[in-house]
Each structure stands twice: as structure tokens, then as C-alpha cells.
Image 1 (cartoon, rainbow, N blue to C red):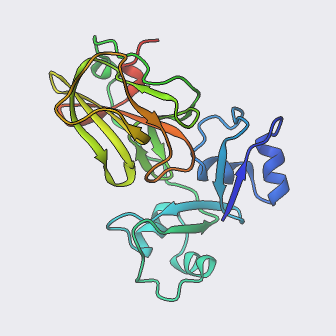
Image 2: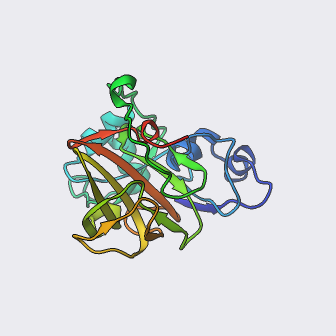
Length: 238
């Protein structure tokens, strides 16, 4: 598995040529929405062969992973030198040689998703991964790249219902805004609020980090309505 930090003036095609892989391999493995918009300091993680990376989650098996990426189980075993294919660990990163994610349809009504509430952007920076299908799964929020330690602000006034470690989300804050609306702020370096605290819109609640399942400093931001995942871009002010 290769980790590459983007340098000034580098392009995805030049990086791919350097390592003997395709731009698509890097883009899909690193969750890039727009391959033309990489930036200096961005961390790219991808396999050393044409294919994808998959992080094992609870319930995964070799057969389900192989089906997800349309490859054979033996391809995965060989690429990762697995001694026992039945023993996969949650969080383990597998190389999927030649893998390509199946298309996933996200059923959503733009009109229903549109909220009259105006959420402010929790932090400023380029969106490096959007809401929707990614690596054969649903990416449940948006990723906003920002410098380590940058301010994360409450998208709206609300009450803190979670402030601490939250599995793959790392250090995470969840705010309840009433009316079934919640927002989630993940991968923080530092949390500045406590459970039960009331916060104002725009208040700094955390600092950008790279905790949990993260490949570089960024904010993973989610919007939930009555427990259902929604596209944050339909709730954020332009």
C-alpha cells in the first residue's frame, strides 16, 4: 500500500504514472470526487497495483468483499498473502486487485431533502468526498479538507448529545437542533464542548484532526433528519 503526499504542481496522472497505476486507482482508493482538484499536502493512499483498497467492517467476509468489487476471493487472498481467508479483522485494509465498485443507487427526493433551515458551513475548505456511493458503499456525509487544528463551528444552534470517541468517526460531536434535525462532526483533534451543553450557531465546538478511520486532516460532516441520513449540501447555505 502506497501513501503519497501531494506536492506543489503535481497532477493525478503524473502521480499515477510515477507508481505504475491508473489515475482511477488513486481516485477511487482515496475517495476523490474531482481528480482534477488535488492540492499540496493532500494524503493519497492507494494500492501498488491497479485496483482499490477496502477497509474491513463488521460483518464483512471474503466472499461478500469479492462480490462487492467484482473480483474473485482467490485474487484477494493472493494480493494480500492471507494465511487464513476466514480470519479477517475489523479495520484491516485489503488490496483489491482489478476491483471496481458496483454501482449503488441512492434513493432520494431533492425536494424532500431540501430544508428551510439554513445551516452554515462548519468549516471552510475544498470538498474532497461528497455524499453518495463510494467504494461500493454509501458515503454518509461530506468530507471537507482543512488544516490540522482549524476551527469546526456549529452549523446551527443546538444541544450537544455526544462529545467523545465514536468508533470509526474518531473524536466526534453530535448536535441536536430540535425537530428531528441532528448534525455530526467527525475525526476531530480536540473537542471543546461537553454533553448537555447548549451551543450557538457558529460557535467553535472542535478542532480539525485525523482521528478514527481517516487518511488526513479533514472534517466529516453529516446531517440526519429523524434518524435518516440526508445530503448535507441540501441543508447548507450557499
